[in-house]
Image (cartoon, rainbow, N blue to C red; front, side, top):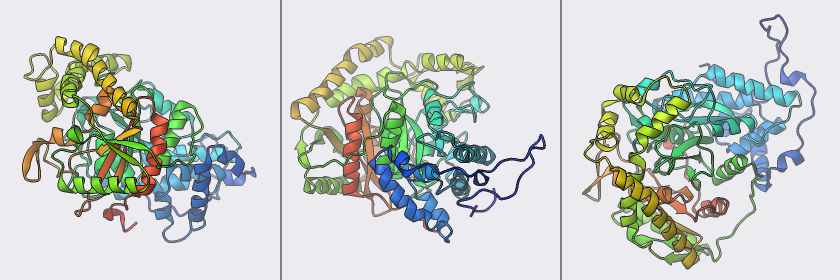
Length: 542
């Protein structure tokens, strides 16, 4: 890839011969009026704020730190600047691609084709220059988890057998984002077949945490989280069955949102179980999560300011706060104190029988259904290969997990009776328990540490230590996030601080089902109270 593109506000001055001998028309050669500020502001008051901030950035585009300024833009900022012509999509895509190249050692992407990205950016600039209608994500490159179907790139699921699998159509969510003006930046690395919390992919290489490259980014959507944290893009697509949005967001110090189950379309996504599977976004600020949510729902985002005064937040200590890493516990308690000082009412209240309900629901409901659901996916989207073929070529660690937990006869494989009971009896009981928790105590959201510890070192895939006590990685990563996905309620992860070793610590807010917009609005207020994390020190030279 070539060096930094300093042509921040214009496209090339020379004509280029096309194959047919005609001259290409460049956007700067067409005298078209810019999209008015009033039109852009129709997307909400927060975009207005973004325009001001972006305008200040764009006034310095020719300075030595111009590329760094572009990398720090939120998605809302970048889109606002590209819609008004203050920034070209070509310049923005070029800056992001250089960041991808410079930090390729993070191994955030499985597939990334700069020429394809620049062609899409060029098309976006031509659209604006020719007066075409511009979408609310005009010109925005978005990294996509490599378990989500795309026409532009293979969809590998992080597994060798699907290295060349090209679905015939985009996943529905990808199609919606493209219709809004975005395009695919590349396909991000994942824990193979989405079966793990580390993103230590032995087929395509481990993903590295931008805050400490010797540590995991979390999984299974580790590549998307690492890319967002490392300023390779401001907004990305992840997917969460049992924490795969929220764990990487927490360990990489970014925002992650798992909506109420089925709020966003899951068609065209490699499945584990339709009971829990849910696509969702990663971003560095809640504003971008709100923008994403509004676009997928076909609404204009509501960015009206909210207040914490009198907001009742549940603090369920019995299940969520035991056995925490000391830094996680300390930073969480400091965060709770800040929220109380800002006017929130902290309600010490536990969820009854939660540990038992999770044991009866989470694993039984997702593991037995994997083979049937994945076979159906391969047949529907033309994989040209069977589930057995995929598993036969999978990495040894994934083969072992499937043999123990998924395939018939495995030592931990659930029975059909356990699956039926989880689906028909225990999950409804859990969901009613959660409804009652919020309703009977008048709680807007519960708040707790997302994971029990910060990111552990790469290679600690089975056991870790917290305060000198051995604990399984599964419990450390998944204990606190499992109730939200199993009960289908929305969950928002926000960074809360850095440990003395410079590792992100995050909190999670879970709200009642279908309270997504209110939860995001609350998250934006809490984000303002807690503040955002500084970029990883590995990026300080940019």
